[in-house]
Length: 172
Ligand SMILES: CC(C)(COP(=O)(O)OP(=O)(O)OC[C@H]1O[C@@H](n2cnc3c(N)ncnc32)[C@H](O)[C@@H]1OP(=O)(O)O)[C@@H](O)C(=O)NCCC(=O)NCCS
Image (tube, rainbow, N blue to C red; front, side):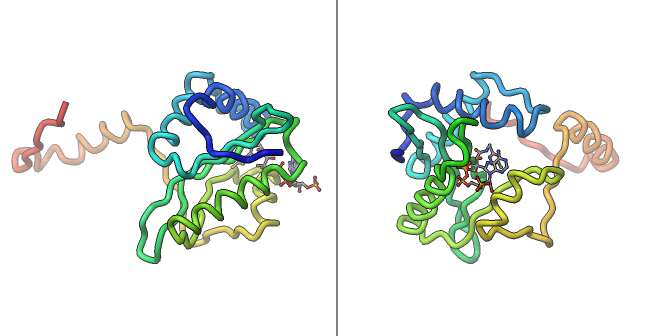
């Protein structure tokens, strides 16, 4: 097994691995190659020093990406994604990728904590994180909203005092 920095030319193979990793874990997320490539591109542009791939016999079987975000108690590793093709799983590759990612983040940013969003109703992969020492963050909850619905509600909410608000046009 080889772990190395990800490059833009790895994106198609990483996208294939990403799609196959999550296909069975969450069938409600329908990832196309383009969408997965966009996601990986986003990570590689934003934080190329925290994007790694794992190769088995010369073939990319997965990767890890995330961002180091300055926080009050040091850098937190956020938006983390780890993914392995089904055939790459249960061989220690995920643990090795995570170890390498955390080591790089410690060395470069002295990162203090890592966050990851995982699936609440499923035993796995939550169990994988727990057995490594991750815990639930009981004082946090993830909130999520549909942009169109939120905008419509907010437009109604601010209607009464709209006359007193000046909203500058967006930059584009
Ligand atoms: C989660 C993941 C990164 C773990 O990496 P890995 O290399 O498979 O795991 P490791 O080899 O380091 O650890 C193996 C242990 O993880 C657990 N595990 C791994 N794959 C599993 C699976 N498909 N089902 C249940 N447990 C699994 C088991 O406890 C396993 O130990 P065992 O083989 O002795 O039973 C990888 O399985 C993966 O990419 N899964 C799909 C995508 C995913 O869920 N990503 C994280 C989402 S937030």
